[in-house]
Image (cartoon, rainbow, N blue to C red; front, side, top):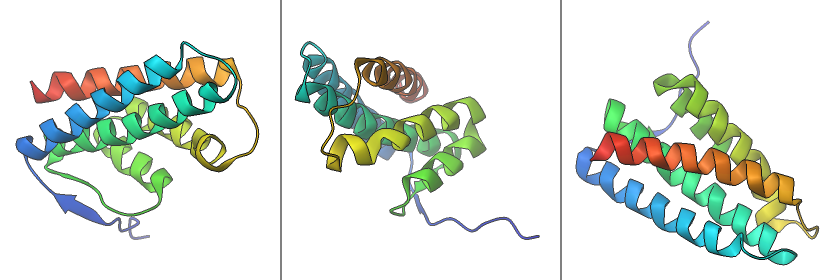
Length: 132
C-alpha cells in the first residue's frame, strides 16, 4: 500500500521562526483568557489550538524543511508525527477541541482548557527550542 500523500509547503528556518513567533503570540492570548471562566474557556482553548497548529508548522519546517498545507488539521497532526510522534499526538488532541472551541455553542470545561494549555505549551516550547 502506498503511503497517504499530504499537501505540503516548503520553507526554511526563516519561516519556522515566524511560525514559532506566531505560536508564542497565540499562546500568550490563550494564557490571558485562561484567567477567566465562562465563555473565556472557549477563547483560551481556541487560541491554544491556533498556537499548537503554528507550533507544529514551525517544528516541521525546522526539522524537515516543509509543513502541512491543507485544511485538515488531523492531517497536520499526521504530518507532525513524521517528525515527532509524541508531539503529533499532542497536536491531534488539540485539534480535537477546535470545532467545539471555535464553532460550538457550549462552554468547554476547565479540564479541557488545562489539557489544551499543557499540549500547546509543550508544542510551543519545542518550536522555540528548534528555531533559536
